[in-house]
Image (cartoon, rainbow, N blue to C red; front, side):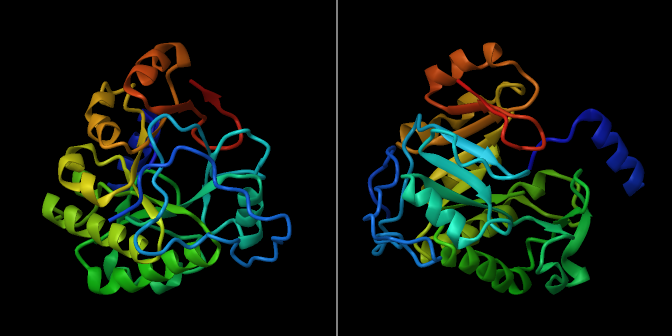
Length: 281
């Protein structure tokens, strides 16, 4: 979840009143005979726990809004899992890219096609973004089958990995009495469901729980660690040979790229809408 700006935060308050070795290279290109009909290209579904694990420093593009631009010359794309079909994923694979499936796993989004399947009892307060509300992650009896269905969708479309968002509800005002233990349990559930489907999974933000969750996740995704002087806390991922995909929104690249290179982060500057525009370190 992108950190809300101060104005947006004020508005919200008012309204509320076992895996393979790390791999930093691109996806191997399938044979020329592989089509884009939606069927999985050869080798798309790893077995025996041999899912993809991106290594530190790999370049990436993160685009969650607007018409997808597939021309950015990077080995990793992170795109919305609902908004893109199997043909799009296969096309990126044909170009040698790995593809990450963005999903919100800790918040309800009112525009998603499965929004009506979430009972009101698990939907809490707003998280600072229009149409999004925190979920009661203690209710795994309700949420696990819904999560599983979403991850089945990612797998069926051929994604290599999952970026589960809103993974630190316990540190926010959600409307539920969430504790750190609830978050650990839930995040491990998300990781297990992804791995059971042969996909890598990233830990989104949730810096305080990195020591406990490092073994469960294959990479990290972080927003604004430079702005908040937190990037060094991601070092355990780098030391474990796991990529840290990092974005800043408000700082110029001159303020964070030198440190990012030193820390071996995969850093970008993006706009909050996460469209095509990017500046890479």
